[in-house]
Amino acid sequence: MTAQQAKTIKYKSKVDWWIWAVIIFTAVIIFVVGIGLSWWITALLGIVTLGTMCLAFLGVWYVIDNDTLIVYQFFMPHRYPIDRIKSVKVGFGILSASALSTQRIAIHFIDRRILKSSLPLEISPSDRQGFIDHLTSINPSITVLN
Picture 1 (cartoon, rainbow, N blue to C red):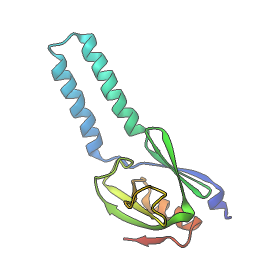
Picture 2: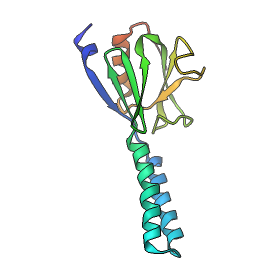
Picture 3: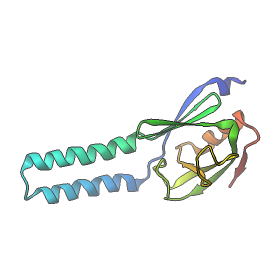
């Protein structure tokens, strides 16, 4: 095991502008709806709604810990074995919950029982190339597709 593999490295999720636009749009809607309501009902609605959204968005990051990829979503960890990764594909998309950007990495596993699906795991680390290099240093048999 190399020194690179022995480290636990945290990768933040890349956040696109549209995430912030959704938060601002939601705040405006709460303010407009709250004009006819009591101030404390509007404040409570805003705190609950915007607080939940911020927790959901801030609770996404990725950790490579020895031979395990840990995807945190809403602060809940999901563990995946790096030695079972078949391929990694750099791509763009919008149909995934554990990615806050359209600039993503699609991870395909050897065994579909790992995800309980035939769809890939899509994530959006801010340092995509560094993340891929780290995965391939642990498992050199990973095929990198562009």
